[in-house]
Image (tube, rainbow, N blue to C red; front, side):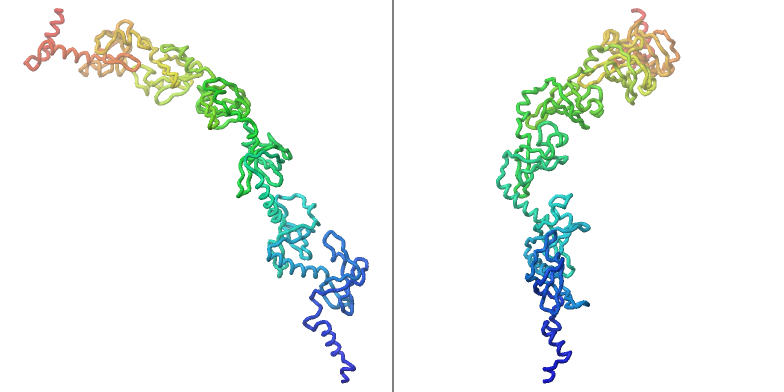
Length: 570
């Protein structure tokens, strides 16, 4: 009884714990309600029913960038850090109270994938800090906007929606995104706008961005791509040549992909097509003047009029310059004369010829230097089969190795001339279509057969004729001879000087010596070949046929003797 009337210190402590909710359910670490009893300077005095009041800074009652709206008598929720500190005051926190309440609310919103409202109030490495009604979240820099934002100042301290990407209450970690909200909003707007657009529709838009391949045009909440090839019928090297950022342009909707929400736009479709009637405007064979707009490895593009270009293939650029890059023949912006070779209106292609607009040097050479003409030129190159000689008109002709010199092999003849040497040649043949000129050097030697079917070559001599020849030159491998006094020259090989080995010695003959020989044939330049051996064999056969056969018992000497006697009588 006494203990009730006069409680001890332990009894008083027990009663205090009971009034505060017990030792395990005390005020500390809990969010409780309190009443604002006074506002002193920047502090709010709050009574939560304990023996002492707590003080909380006013800034904890306001959102970032805003003033606190708090009056005496208002009921607020605060977090109790400690019931009593060293000064006997209760330690309260409005931020902790808001944070705990915010986490409860945010967890519910995160589970529902709902949007939350917050305020960007600070910068940190890699992004920004966002106040979500008491809880602080991290906003990565890549999640601020759909496109990179250079200045985030206008977005600071403004309440706006965010999407929670990740949250961990134990670690106090929340990651949010503003970009996800914008993309969702834009997708909704795009879906609504696309429903009102149709292919072929003409609409105005503002140029938002320019790239190397085109420009993006804002059609009022949705972007469309204006490709560089659809800006103009004429060649456009870069979109900035036609439009600039901020320009208002009129475009036509070419294609709409409603699944990917992509729109393709065109400007040239609003202009008249210059390719209509192009075949009649540029007939094959017409000579035109155009401007070189682009040069490639395979040719050059020539603009005939704005929007109409033709290709001069590298093979049609020059009569004489082969395997040369087009840039060494023409240059960009150069005006050139061309001939229309082919027109394909469906494929929008025109084939042009540059060399056809110039005189054909092969035809000009053929007219100025007919077969048999003698010209002088420089040996440009020596190959294993002949010499290439530069000729007037910037054309080349070839001297085949068999037409370099008489009486020696072609391989030996190739060593008689060197690159850079000036030589006289005779024109043997000109093929204008194949651009080939055949030349000869040996045909210029004294007594050579006339080029082009001369009398000495083909008129007076025939195969198997026996003629008197005179020795012009004695060589180790035979004799260079001439038929008659001023006839065609030919060659008698060592083996053709006689039937017997003793007769096949060229040193037996002297220059100017005359003897009979048979024409055995003509080479490709119609130079005759002679043979003493063939003549002897032919005479023997004729003698046997007329004066008997060796099978009858008469010897070959008897038969030839009778033939000689008959010849003397005649």
